[in-house]
Image (cartoon, rainbow, N blue to C red; front, side, top):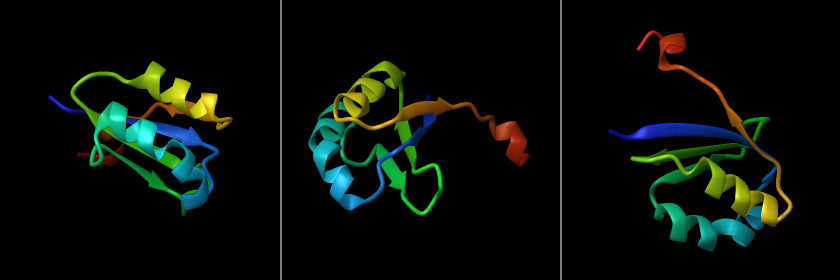
Length: 79
């Protein structure tokens, strides 16, 4: 079963992303994470079969970015 984890970040744009992209690809694979720069919270979405919360936070924080997991439930969306 795949889980989705959502993070609020301070990664502003593709330039910021370039500093962590290689580490994120190594950890999660190239197609298992995305950023929504248009969102005010600069959302990072991670899809994985296991939890990578501490590892993702460590990568972002090591490069000086905010990284805060946001709780959510699909029940909120009547799915």
